[in-house]
Image 1 (cartoon, protein in one colour):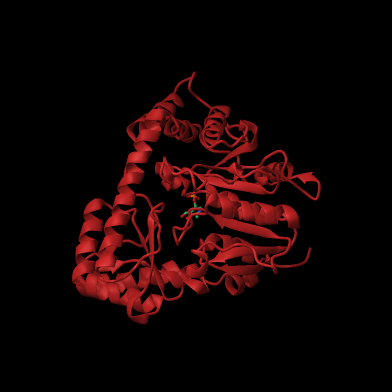
Image 2 (cartoon, rainbow, N blue to C red; image 1 turned 135 degrees about the vertical axis):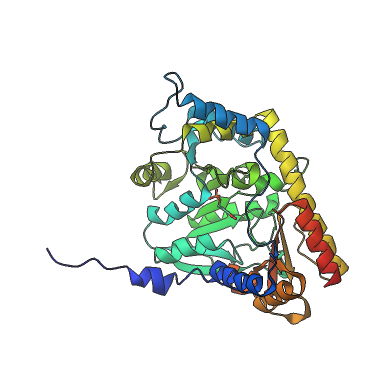
Length: 397
Ligand code: PLP
């Protein structure tokens, strides 16, 4: 036997580096709080604050209590998820005019878990990410040693990059509506992505974690990539109950792997199942019952109320910025408010000014990618009183 146990410094320290963004935010906030003795308003973290809709909490409690009885006890859940939840999600897709059979849906303990699995399915390859974007896409691919090409999201393309002539075969990540910008792809632009992926033999990873924020009567912005014909041959879709139903603490999500989705002739879902089995034994029965309850008419009404509340917060924050002459990106379908920092300040300079003069925490846009430098993100997942107080302070700042 040779070798010794050593930390993989190459990946953990050199490639990934430290969690600079949120560690640095926490450090500066702790310093501020110690000096001022008051807690700032937190518009930084993208975590929900409202309680679960009553029928969802009830389903969770009933299934949990059942685990203490002979009839209600459940052992390991089915690897792909319980059929009742897969069917409920499939019906949701049908409402969008997308044919996604229950058998194509794989339940997970959240979108992030599945996003982290994706690079394991392939050899080294090129991945294409929007800049700015949700940092987990970048980190999991850096850790896998993949080459990353960034597609700049800016005013010129409505913050919605499309493939250019240099975009070859690879994995394309699309988040719609997007974190951090809030921009959502319309049908025509999504179709451009699908056409490109089919033409180049590429895979699209479509993240719809925020699709529930698209208003019910909006037919222009698809809630799923499968409403574009041909997507079933080139796209997998990652969904989450975190922001749509308040499951950030409970943990439930899913990935759609259509039977038609093949890479080099092999069904991707077969490889997915194999890898998934290495890392997970499924999602708790009470959690899946709660997720299914969130998809009943009553559950959906409750979730929509919560979403309306967060969108109301976002409107309040956007109006306060506008009153100061700061325009934000058109993100009416998103819990995030994305804007350029005033006075040509860098993202971190504005972070400090906001904390110092208004006692408000936000997230520096540079943390989401180089193109986010000079921009800033507010999360509207706060309470209404917090949004209103933040708005008051912004107006007076
Ligand atoms: N995808 C995006 C774009 C996100 O912003 C987040 C969380 O903030 C996630 C996925 C993670 O979702 P989950 O809580 O289901 O892991």
